[in-house]
Image 1 (cartoon, rainbow, N blue to C red):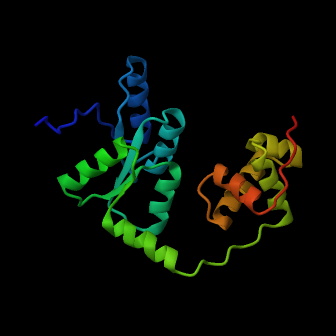
Image 2 (image 1 turned 45 degrees about the horizontal axis):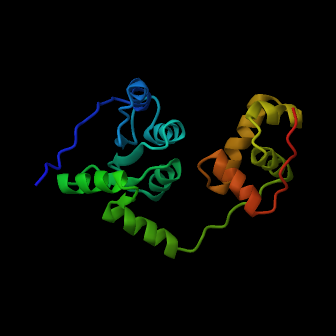
Length: 197
């Protein structure tokens, strides 16, 4: 029977180090199949690192590994593109199963995480604040693919104000990214702003 051991391509102490390590491997065509990513790290956290890995190297799967099994962290990791979510007390068999599942294009979730997600689906949905007219204007710009700088220019505000509006919208609507905000805008009938300079 062939060995099931998997070679380790490298280790990193933080999100940015993980990105740098993968970037070094890219020219050699030796990208890792699966990355195990802690969510709580100094500097760039695991959720942002997952988001950037999936944006730059879509073929690299990422399994989140953390001590925390709260709904917000689970959802943030999955929205960022994680192909699995393990708790740090997982045994070697669970870790191996998560790696194999991710490599096969499947999602592996710790049983405690499955319970959290199931409970959240059974719970009544919290009321979502309705965006203000200004926030709808910003949502329309986000849906058109505008950057914060472009939003600021088009709406006659500072870039910092535009960034604050975007952050406020994500928090108000319970969204994790601009992509989700754009989808929300489309699903809720916010007209997409026509692209312009």
